[in-house]
Image (cartoon, rainbow, N blue to C red):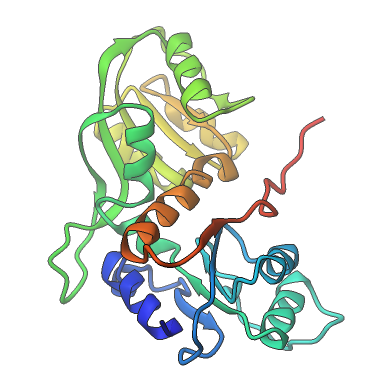
Length: 264
């Protein structure tokens, strides 16, 4: 199959048309007419991930984050990791496709999958939006209910167990059982107000700043589980989808794409 045939399958699953205007999704590097050998699925297309693709004879990388996001002034080997990754991919005829906010906005996208990992039921979109020429009820985030209310510490332990977390950060406990929960995978401070207006007991996201934690105002518990930790599960979801659609292809999960944040 050609790159274009596989990207068409991805686009039907998570349409580029529902991505955010600021985003950069779709085929970002490569020749759409190239024949695909094997596929590597990753969160980020870094230089070591491209090396891994070469080692494993993969000439198509499906990435959650786009390697090209901000404007590029030059593409030279003495620039940053983005430019170095682009040069290495082009030299070795490796194509790179990014999904990103297409998965964020889809009603069964990245926040939905995380809600299922922690066992939420009766889920719906947290922040709905309308996209022209789309029948999908799209939007950012998910809200739902736990199967049974949990004490705050028990809920924290559930998250650590289900999401394989070593740490999490949270606002002041509100001494209330957690029953309703909202989730925005990735950087979700913009959705604090929406979550509070929905009267949730807890809001799960990442990249919260110091002052964001005050915004809870004893109405809910804000929980920062880490950016990488909130998104890491999506690699397996992409792989499972591609395995069903492309049963004759070898589809691998990147082992080089690890959390860039370290703790001491």
